[in-house]
Image 1 (tube, helix red, strand yellow):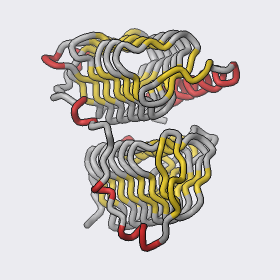
Image 2 (tube, one colour):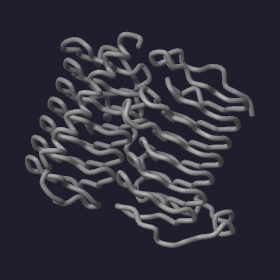
Image 3 (spheres, one colour):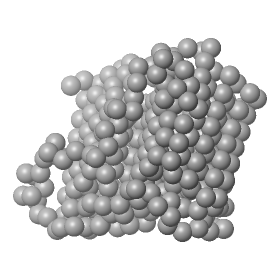
Image 4 (cartoon, helix red, strand yellow):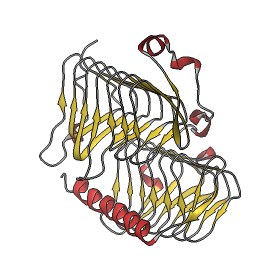
Length: 347
């Protein structure tokens, strides 16, 4: 193994350049950005995003990030720390949390802000670890929300094989052939950030202060269909929006989290949030201020009423959005507007 030196030039963020150790493999389609430290003997595969555009991402030795993993921080508030000998399977999201040494994380899992997973633990596929959870060492973790379903030992850990466990969701079925053409983009207004590595085979109408982040896929059969992105809205890294020849309409100040799938004709109204790792099937409507919790599966024809939280698989009414949460979601959306401007300015 040897370090891949063909690294994208936009890796710098503000004053920070990634600190890359020896004997590192980085795929040409991966992105390692800003305030990120990667220790030796780590493998970073296709379309992995390590986005240290705020607090620090620190990754230990001998780690593996499989295709389309996303690792991010909570702005300037909270970084991400990952120990040695960790394995992250495809489509997992690691967000502003602390991961110990010798950790397996199964595909399509989401580990959220300020959570801690301690040494020699296994996170099974399709697991959601909500914010602020702390799992002791030698935990077998599963569920949405996650629980410790079994205490394990070092022998169990060393003999464990994640290959025998796969996710219920096959993301590849949502991805169609893409052929990016600049004429598909209609830009209305200023301060619009669109990453240059997105894959597009549909029409995009992007409005002022909106953004589409790294390795996102926006596609449609036969090159038809449209994604409309309202003012101040964002589509975050590794999300897949498949119009199926119809229209995905995203209102103003909407947040589409990391690794989200939207499959088919969909309306998402102003100030709504779609949490990380969620899947929305066709003909869904998310009314104003609606919230889809992380790792939710939203069945086709679902309507989320104004100001309500839907969660689970299948997603159902959980409770109403609180006034405190409304302020928090608004703050997150504003952070993305600021980030967009910083990336456009060459930070």
